[in-house]
Length: 301
Image (cartoon, rainbow, N blue to C red; front, side, top):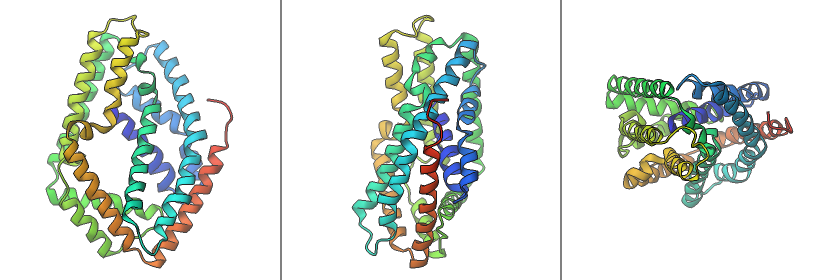
């Protein structure tokens, strides 16, 4: 399920907050799709019963309300008080760079902890045999497609893809990278540790983890949705889904984290005054939009 959550994070933060730049109307329209996107991503695994469907709508509405009222203001404040002072600084402190990367991980952790299935895993104990068959088939389809995409790319193509994706992301916050800065990213991705999604190691860890989840569910009996021991076991397994590489290959995870923080530090230190100003203007506009969005709606749903 952690892939499901990661996809939702991409939809929410990558599209709604960045891809539209400072266009408040478009960001607002896409943000309002959060409920639909979460429901769609969950429904892809199996056909839901009426009871499960009602649970999903209620929990997703509550999640959206939580995110709107607590996380959007948090992102806006972080952009103004943590990110922008670092971007506009004449002397980029490595410790501050490390912290903003860790802040991003913390945002992701909190998002995952509140995600409906992770927060209320008892719904998984209501899964029916035919739903289990559907879910297993969907997981195998995802895993097979990921392997096919990976096998079609050379190592050079993988590096180029990663650089292009990050170049596009930076562009959306007003930062147009120079050829030298793209070279910094290229060298980073060429020398990264194993464990990147595009190389397959993370996908293998995910596949193993989800098979273990299925095994846990199949050992449980229907009607035990509220059994504290069952719920505790599920929560424990779901909790590590967002950081599989860290839990299963901690040295690899730390090496990748260190290299990424080093890359961001080097990139920030290479920014021109023109680039800094462009990012400052764009991010302040986005922060204002997030504050406006956070004020809409006073009740869940």
